[in-house]
Length: 569
Ligand SMILES: NC(=O)C1=CN([C@@H]2O[C@H](COP(=O)(O)OP(=O)(O)OC[C@H]3O[C@@H](n4cnc5c(N)ncnc54)[C@H](O)[C@@H]3O)[C@@H](O)[C@H]2O)[C@H](O)CC1
Ligand SMILES: [K+]
Image 1: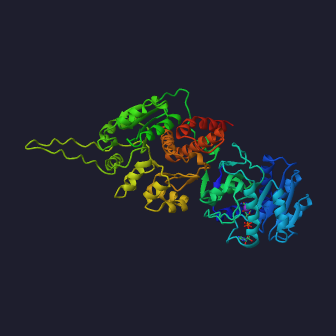
Image 2: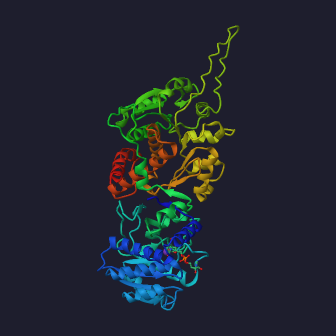
């Protein structure tokens, strides 16, 4: 079952279409509330748990009251406070009939405060996607009460950011006393832009309906939600497939379908050869990390094309004894255009290339990148002829035809530094560009803040303009295809925010390209496995800091195994 990411308008259209197809609004609300209750019941024991539901004027409040009813029926002790919602409201009446104590919030904030002080769970059902103005007055007062109590009680710091469907594959950490569970989105988050009202209370668990709203995945909203669970509210598959969405979420099920088949009769040639080109004196480790990841991806043969002194430093490293080496011409440890001569003969033997990790930003290295990509013929420095001796001009090698290639790190900076249009000169749908926001900003000639504020749209627009797959890294990494399709990674883990993890991702995608995946699919699967490895490591260490990029590379094998198990289910 595919999960899509929606704008607020797309979500409303989807609900309209579901309603028209016979799945009424009332049924959707019923399912939404039931899902919230189900998740809570899965994680907390009913008998000992006191729940306070804060219900607002719209459908979000309705969902909350449906959840209140199901929770009361399951044996939880439930109190609901209505804000701007009549007490005779249908959902409130039904909840009351099952034993939910209901009070108007406005009239007695002290009672509300006392209830929250004694509660284990606060359900935030005040506002959902209907937010349309700044939060003030009583609503701000209510949220302040929750926030203060949350601060007093919480152990929030290391809880990992996770994303999963209603069948949780990862642990959720429950803060010691008070947890905040948001219905659909935390109140105050703009579901389109990701803007956050200062009154917003961060949620430990957000249960979002049908699919994530795009704003949830953008900054700063992404930081206001820890675990996000996508709950099915019964919208028929056919309606979902026919309705527009802004992106697709890379779910475990989707990633599993992308795993390359493995023939029993395979040999190392079957599984593809990857050539990693990078490295410089200042960054000797980066190509090594890419190679480790390519090895772990299942590719058959990995070669590192690096300056010899980088090879000396890397060759003894444990995993890298499994690689072969290609020494490339360099000046003081920086690759130079002459490297093309060596590469021209070698490249036809490879199924994929990774270009960039650790290259450095020397002018001659950029010239090498341009020449390799066929952007500009390499002009050899003229030998200083003496006297009458005739210059013997060696013919310049043509830029070799490249296999599918990952362009990463300083190779992206080389593209950004190219003084003409590079995109039209590259064969279309042949490259995966893996910029982080800073590199993306340079490539697009905009500020990094602009990239972050427009992540999804910018990646989509540029992938189409450049006719290549773009992986815009960061929390909820975006993968955009040349044909306009966009996928979003479900992972937003700080584990991966450490030096070298980008090199690991580049090598991994390269390894998947070598196994025959198309650029967009290699990128989607690579980003997923990379995030999953980080997630598994965070669970293993029970912390989301201090994990090394080498470990992320090593754990790719665990990630692949976990995913293969999902695929086998
Ligand atoms: N996704 C689905 O298929 C389903 C979603 N459901 C839930 O419905 C909400 C959206 O409901 P809606 O009634 O449109 O909006 P809200 O409940 O968020 O509230 C709107 C309400 O609040 C007023 N308002 C907006 N901003 C403010 C503000 N800053 N201060 C005060 N008042 C404000 C506005 O004027 C309206 O009166 C969605 O999130 C889901 O939870 C369905 O229930 C199931 C199907
Ligand atoms: K909410």
